[in-house]
Amino acid sequence: MKGAKVTQAANTTEAADTTEGVSATARWTAAARADETRRDGALFSDPLAADLAGPEGFARYERYANPGTTEFLAIRTRYLDEVIGRSAELTQVVLVAAGLDTRSARLDWPAGTVLYELDQPGLMEEKEKRLAELGVRHRCVRHAVGTDLTGAWHEPLRAAGWDPSVPTLWIVEGLLFYLAEDDARALLARLADLSVPGGVLAGDLLSHQSMVSEFAREGLRRLAEDGCPWRWGTDRPEDVLAECGWTVREVKVPGEEGASFGRWPWPPLPRDQQGFPMNFLFTADV
Ligand SMILES: C[S@@+](CC[C@H](N)C(=O)[O-])C[C@H]1O[C@@H](n2cnc3c(N)ncnc32)[C@H](O)[C@@H]1O
Image (cartoon, rainbow, N blue to C red; front, top):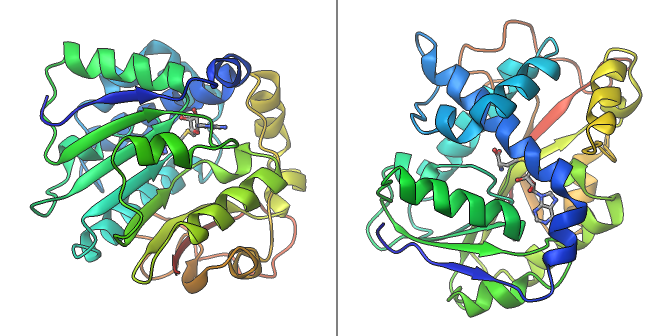
């Protein structure tokens, strides 16, 4: 495999054990990408996703299915693919909580791109093994770093070669609501602290309604039962990002221009709409 290398922070074994349920959510989102890949007019193609998801991923995909979830997961991936495509000048990229993401193999990266993938050590080890078995060829230089994103993860990232003097594109996809709010804010703030001018952050957040809406209740119950509860959401994503040191470029809800791709079948929910779960996609500059 071109450029593949795994490093692991020494103090992270305990974190891997206690977050097993959350790590398994990576299989769920891989199954969602596999499902999208099979659709006519798919928003992206991820041929490795079905294999990486495995039966457990597909079982979770079915178990957590909710109106809008399937559509949103496809839109989120495409949105972030487009952010990456528009940021070709940023050749240092970090997938924060990469899970079973295969962008290293499926995107057409600019020459010289160095991609770092961060996630729980257990998950990263399992992923490296499977990618090697599948003979996956990466299309950029790639470093897999097993670490706990609520700890001193920047140290193993640096040890893997990440250069603090180079502007970084950080992608935080499907992570922030699995962390306690304080941990999520600390992570966002550290990403800003580590960034030099030109750095960009893109990812997603949940609304507070997603935590309390009756339409979310059953899904939330199942996630909690499986050891991977969603922990928080905000109706003020712009403020949260600004408070953590970021200058918001855009926040979009599914269905808005640039966050629909013909895949969201409903009008976008008004931002002040109460009672319905809502997801936010964002891009911010340091
Ligand atoms: C829903 S998955 C998303 C993965 C990937 N970004 C995607 O979209 O498919 C959430 C990921 O967050 C990771 N994660 C959650 N808490 C973490 C932590 N404290 N440290 C490292 N990774 C964490 C899990 O291991 C899992 O891979």
